[in-house]
Length: 114
Image 1 (cartoon, rainbow, N blue to C red):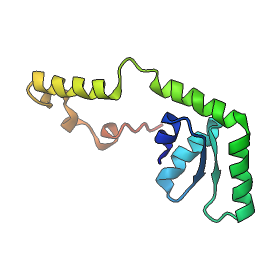
Image 2 (cartoon, rainbow, N blue to C red; image 1 turned 30 degrees about the vertical axis):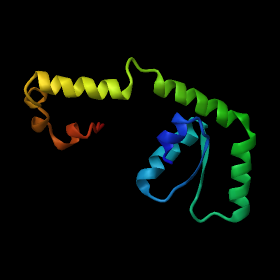
Image 3 (cartoon, helix red, strand yellow; image 1 turned 180 degrees about the vertical axis):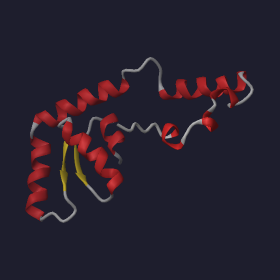
């Protein structure tokens, strides 16, 4: 189960970070108090304490419920959005009108530099 699945199913997270890409998602979970991080070199008692905290502290459940509501508060479902874009491409003869190929790599990946 990944972080988005946990939020979708309203499950507070005890995350074990195993890669730098996963760290970002776990930091967001901690930021919104929907779970906690347990480092990969944890001791058994530390892990048990964190697990007990997430299971008994209602704050985590309340916050993951709030995140789930925010995630689902959209004008259309993911399936409806996917169908709309497929139909858009079909109606307009391909993806040329989108001009994706003219974007720089950082625009393509939606990166902002300050």
